[in-house]
Length: 261
Ligand code: PGA
Image (tube, rainbow, N blue to C red; front, side, top):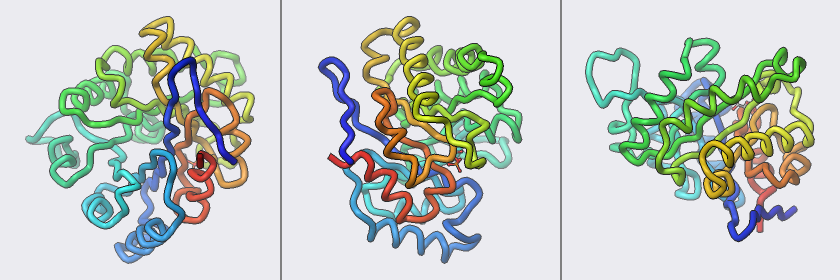
């Protein structure tokens, strides 16, 4: 199904990401990464922007072997260039191996590794200073959704982004309701569309109408080959960030194929 994003005079190019998390493709070996890369290279070519985010240890391998149709993305980055920061990777090192995209602020980074909005803001500022593309993740917990306070929770997360961005062409927002991640509980198309529209309207009020019209907002949280088309029908849904469904090239190709022209 062809889905077009048009907004006044401006068309947003859809963007789909595959977050492999701590998975080496469908296994835990370099060989399984090679298998997934081969399957992606053989799959239907994307007609929208697509990125894949393997574990850091495989970034170099993926960046040097995957088709240029798939931008290789890190799942995290630190805000310092180098030094005594055990376990971290820098923008400069990523760019040196041809990786110019990173995910920031995923709920698993926030929940399991204690990342704060302040740290995310510093990372975003750093990425902006070196021209690195960022997919910045935001999302609410189940209790927030049930209490009707979703935007109250999303706004501070959004502020950590907007306070640190001057070049919006390098920023994509990934709205991922935490209760939908890895649970099979996808947001309904209406819930997703309404929240994306609320985010866009907050951006229009806080940053500018131009930025709000241009910025791409991906939906993430149990997005898969079966639900992508109905979610993509929402005019403010500009793509997906898929986790589990990105580990198989065929289901991932169906998801990005939702945006075929
Ligand atoms: P999921 O993960 O598609 O497996 O729910 C999405 C994400 O966390 O980015």
